[in-house]
Image (cartoon, rainbow, N blue to C red):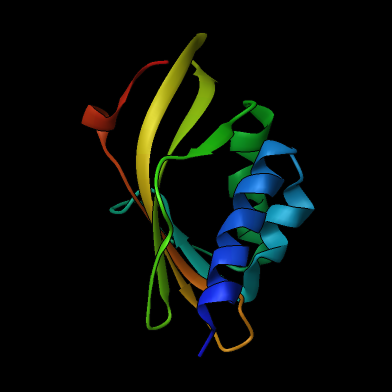
Length: 124
């Protein structure tokens, strides 16, 4: 099982890589067969190629991530509140999100779920 320190480091690497527009760094946080459901209820993306294509959209939109509270770790899961600021349809938009990362024993994310909906989106 991943240690708390590994999980916290994985979350921070994800956020830091996003904020540097480092697509390789973002994808490196994930296991090669990891799944992403972002937001929950949308089709699941699986594997590095699909994740790279998915995250490229946010990176190209200039998305920046801001941690809004402590990272909570339990068992093999890390959950964290954050918000995203990006340009969406020509306007700077804020999206309030809670992400859940599930980690493998090596400290890689094997499953990500992002929780947010239309009520969590608005002007920045």
